[in-house]
View: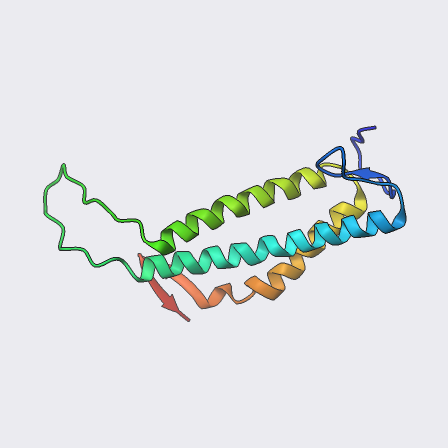
Length: 141
């Protein structure tokens, strides 16, 4: 049965029909998985921000641009930009899966994901203030 309001109970279906809990053990394992995926989401977000800061602070050596208004210089994709894009895609997929897990409307799943996001932020992203990107330059505070 699909719940449309927040409920508390150990019987929950997460993301796939095969991921069903019917005992306390399976429910607690599912909550642990939600918690870990949420913390991992914050870790990947931290890595993505750091790769982006590296990509911005180390532009590839290019000749001076030609001052032609209709011509735009071709930009080479650096490995840091590629890593940033790849991490963005993976992180977006994990974020949408976490959102869908919350849409099971189970209170325990909701709390596990919010707690995992909070703990992941404290562990991995609370130092984000050290990396500040301003006007295409990276300044470390």
